[in-house]
Length: 120
Image 1 (cartoon, helix red, strand yellow):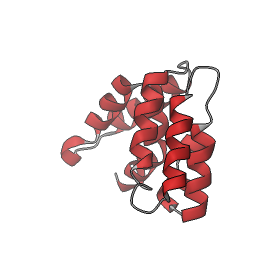
Image 2: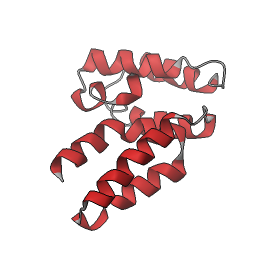
Image 3: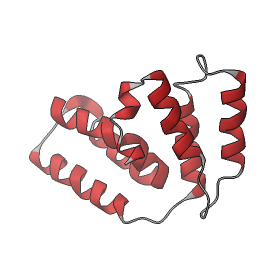
């Protein structure tokens, strides 16, 4: 189960940025720490499903705000202002927030985020 929890940690923000519904469904699979082969298959099926979903700006904004939580106490005022400027311009056609979050993750060496599929 630990291996699957680590895999979920890598996919968590990617899924959250595409579909809150799928995020909650997958999170529910891990509740209770009871695991089965059936749950493992469902987990990977849900990940594959989420990969096919179109961009959802509301879900992206939510996920990016969660990711921002890793920086809010360490980022400068300028970095904070830039992040929220990027977030304000977020649309289906423009996403400058994601590359900016990746830049911050690299600058501050947030390993959990650098391992995330969100930045793939």
